[in-house]
Image 1 (cartoon, rainbow, N blue to C red):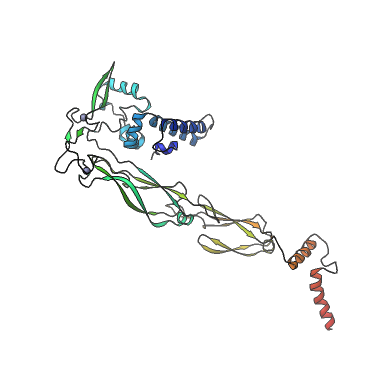
Image 2: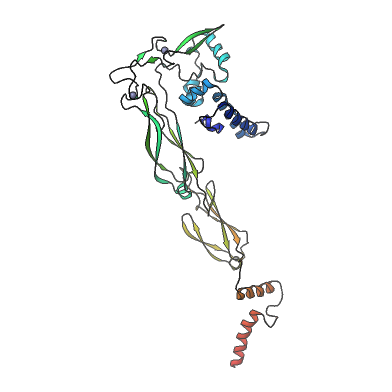
Amino acid sequence: MKRDYYEVLGVSKEAGADELKKAYRKLAMELHPDRNPGNKEAEEKFKEAAEAYSVLSDPEKRRAYDQYGHAGVGGAGGGQQFQFDPNQFADFEDILGSFFGGGLFGDLFGGGGRRRSTGEERGSDLQYNLKLSFRDAIFGKESVELSIPRLEACGTCHGSGCEPGTRPETCPQCRGAGQVAMRQGFFQMLTPCPRCEGKGRIIPKPCRECRGEGRIQRKSKVSFKVPAGVDRGTRLRLQNQGEAGRFGGRTGDLYVVFDVEADPKYERDGLDLHQRLEVSWPLLVTGGTLEVETPYGPDKVKLAAGTPADHVVKLVNAGVPRLQGAGRGDLYLHLRVAVPKSLTGEQRELLEQLRRSLEGEPAGAGEEGFLAKVFGAEKGRKKKRK
Ligand SMILES: [Zn+2]
Ligand SMILES: [Zn+2]
């Protein structure tokens, strides 16, 4: 599936010529093969941007693209438009003309659907950006309902554009071909028929409801299920939920593009989750059980005695479910030593004792040593009792 040209360049559908040029220049600088030697992805994106710009910078191609999508400019998305069939062309001159006049996207090869004599047009694809909570992205959501403004088939004429009781007629000027031959110097060019605008037929009595468009702008509810495991940038295609086609053309698709809110606890990296976890130093030293909260509920982790302070615990299968697949990523707990900011006098004294002991000073050497007091007093008491 080809990406939307506006999306490729990162501009809105209303972008002017200057904005397009600026956006393209920026991308081209960034992605230029000279700057990204051997980078296949950059090269593909560079080509993609060049193609998008070549279409959108040309007012006529842009109009065709806006109206028909990729099919309108002969992009691969249109399929049949790009399959070159020599028999389709009246003579050699036409082909030459298309090369001379059309450049990379020859008008005759990808004539924006003009040569379809029925005039049918596929409806545009629509895009909706939906922000999900962190948990909804991981677990999915049974039902989401969106209100989408879109062009829908006119109920009065059922999309035909004709006043009920009337029918479209074959265009008398082009006799239904949708295009007429025009001489331009040496070459003979085919151009869209001015009378029917390339549709090949005319509507003698336009429907009053839709003024012959066959479509009406409406706001409609669309509901769907969010699968578990979507990520930022995941696109969900809802077939036939885009804009209605014209004159019997197919309905476009609706693309829901997800964004995901950040979570204060977990950081997501694809299918894996990362979490920082503070643990006390004694627990690392002596080992023990750590209670943790995973997205799937509480869990217990056993720490061995002498666990390093920067230890990473991997909880297999506690990460994000694979979108439309089996299995999950993992949850990584990045341990950090909790350093208390304040201590009670007793804690301070215990730590002092411990420190001295670990550093080799005999514990309880001094009269006031806390451990000495505790154990010494104990001994003393026992002695006294004798
Ligand atoms: Zn109508
Ligand atoms: Zn015509």
